[in-house]
Image (cartoon, rainbow, N blue to C red; front, side, top):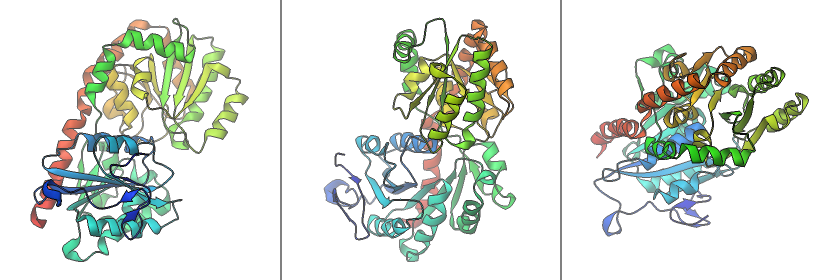
Length: 409
């Protein structure tokens, strides 16, 4: 990996094995006295939804008023780190090998001490729960303000995660949630202090791809060996239990039994890969359902597909759903979390109950046999995608940073 701020790992003393770990200097070689310094921290920089949102938010940040750096905990999960560095933002790997490797906390403390940040923004509960304790260990005069974004549903997290998060969340100066559903899932005592910020995606990228849709559709079909008269259904989700791949695979079997002209592809990696591939073989799906692994061209694949499928059992507000609306594609999704906030049944997509493969298959059959319906839903999805503008979301979060950093400067 090239230099320019990517450190792998940062050690407790502040040096790294890939170059110095000092904060990025401003004009004249000194830290900027005018820009607000923000450290954005997360457990992983892999291809997850929260991680991709973080990357887009930092990329769209106001560099005149803010100076960003990014830190992540697990050294093995760094797929998006180079993207952040290429955008001009220093990235610090805190060098943990596994979740229970807590040496990263000392490295975070060293980074905070030498970085002199005004704000530290934690994403997802693991890093926040333990990272807050690190911030609290600093002398009061050197302590950055804490912002926390809850991307999923608090009440669906593992019990130990909920306990740790609840025990430390009082240290935050600002609590952000990504959807109304995420707000309602908070403990009641936290709801009044939480602020909904609907995060977004870079709509300009989607617009550019949509202008080349016909060619991209041909290319994607050629890549995936899908016939022109077949409907290509794409899922974009990590291979985890809550993402509903059990439902999607059963639905694919029903599609085959009904002899519908539908092919499936799934983007994502994760702990369930072996189990899901075994289930795929048991169902005899063959080339009808392809696992594509982790990909960097998700928007291109969405643009070249006919239907976006989200079979999740639980969600906050998934970035893949935002991306699907941004390129203008028909959607079949389950009525979980913040999904109904983005998709209205029979208006810009079809909504089905979670855990119901037959209902999911019925919705796919409607779309496969009615091109006019697919087109109408896709057009409406594109129109409504303006609610997911990353620029607006970034500006709203930066208004929080300004408010918190003001009294400290």
